[in-house]
Length: 199
Image (cartoon, rainbow, N blue to C red; front, top):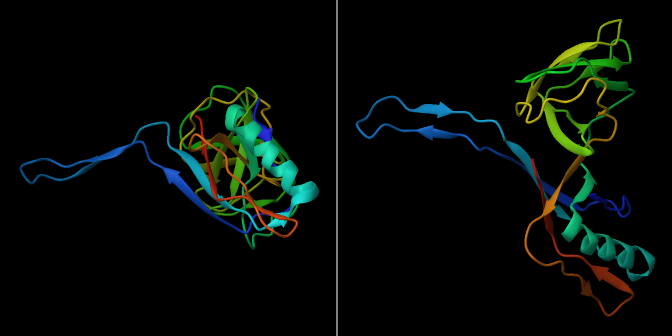
């Protein structure tokens, strides 16, 4: 089970990425190139933390990272400046969905998901991070057919929780070690780390 990293202190900076598992097929004799899209595209994020007091925040953060090295990590996905508002309690509307449009229900009537707004779906005990491909408003019934990116990697179950108010990225830490620098003052500096979605 993945480890929730502490919310405080907040991150100092981040570099999100979309990993594309497709490719461009370029013919050797000068024909038109073709984009080959495949399922499995996913996100990763490089996280930069500020210096923090050794006690208790630094000790706890370093301990959680060490634990996450084995189990995986969860951290809130930053969306600087985006006013999310009150999305309600959105969930997946119907089983067996696939592709790049996700049917949802449970939104506050009229709630607008903005192009590029991130959200996570909890399915099978794991979070999957997605973004909206266009602005979309929920109907009076709280339903919406939301265009998303990347395409669904799993078919979420009917009623699977969707985290719009506080999207999370869940995955494994890159690299085989976790470091933390003890400073002369009562502070600790944790070097940058990267979380890559597992699926």
